[in-house]
Length: 610
Image (cartoon, rainbow, N blue to C red; front, side, top):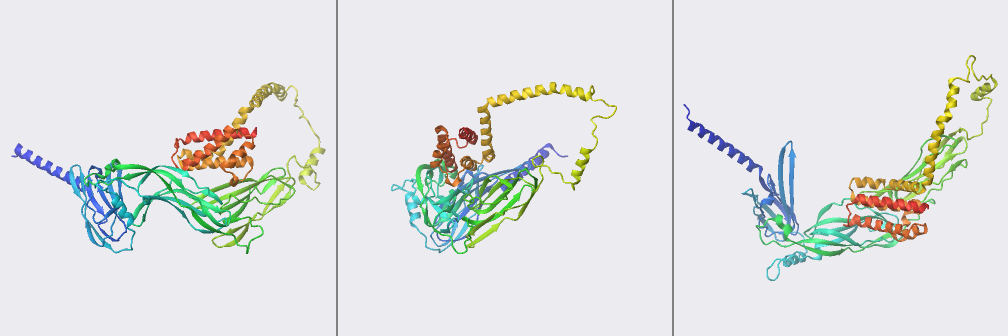
């Protein structure tokens, strides 16, 4: 017979086994490791090691090992990850360091220690074999180590100019006139950066410039002379030289706050408290200028119709309808597309048949970056109004461009197109052809007997007659109310003009509104500036390339725009340009900027039409 004490004893034993298994499972889940375990490296070259904790948070207590004879040239970098899949959660965290040394030999980096929930964990050790590499500059590393400790041995934060700088990079330094040069202003820093603002913006004199900066510039890492830098793209421009000889790309200057990490002499202190061990320093950083050589385009093989296009292009033409009637308009659109500067393209000189009335073309340009190159298309839409019936051969559009990669001139043309025009309705003199079946039918109709009513049926006094008699009493109120509404609209001249102006503004800012809804701040501000200049270009019929903040004010004043509206235009453009590259007040209020710009374009529309 089993006693109660035996039952309790067995139960206690089972519970202890269960607790031991659960504890073992938790310990297994909390895995503390380091990678890589073996490293082969040359002197002066940095390498990265990462300590990882699965199922635990390293913020609870992490002690890095003594890295000697290695020095820390980057990091620590911290990362945490939390996932929930089918109700099951997982958590992990990691710490990474960039290390380097000038000593040759085989070394072992000891284990790191992590305290998680009161329990100590040790990582594995790292075996590092260092061979002799190329001679590296030591002055920078030595100066940083000396600056880390003062004369009294007290740790202090120092910063050298080599810890941060701006480099102007170009993809090529010798080009043809009109050929794209991609210029990138790159910020290199070993510190965190905040509150960046532009002090001096390049003017790009001698170039046709297009902003090609990424909407969300990524941060990358680059090693130089054994030092790990974080890089940021400040500005990337597509530049098209307009002259020849030696042209200079101006420098870019910024002001920023850098966060300087004080040396930590307490190895037991958690690295996650490093935010409380920082200093802030306001600095000015300026790049150097860069000169490029611009060659003239070759004269050999240059076509007579060459208009200055440099790049690679294709030419297409299209009719919205190949058949129409006399008096009915059709659209004939010619489109140039490709890689290069399309905004400077001249209009075509097409000779149409004199029986086709041709209106001035509507010109639209859509330029966009693809990688580091500028691509796009430019269309010329002609409205054709045939005066007489017939078959018309439309003129072909032709262009010649210079391909800088192949260094040859290329000519291309659109395909042959014909427009078939039938007789119109009511707008052509009507002639009867005796051989025409339709004309014969018409002749029979006018020579036959005509009967106004059928025998046995009377029109007067019937229902149709009564309906016609009542029609004026039904139509008169409708005409009366419509006439009153038209009078109100005529009296509301200001309101009607304002509604039309807002419609123009909304159409101009359609793309900016889409970017606002996506919260794509940089692209939004770029598009607002583009919309404002595009609006001015359309209204005053001036090429976009000839507009700038300096001359647009004088131009608007000549057109009768009020000074207050001009000031608002200039300030809006300046604000949007600054918002693209630097923090500005209220920069996240995209809706406010959109509404202000909408009102601004509507005001200009009112005043330019007055």
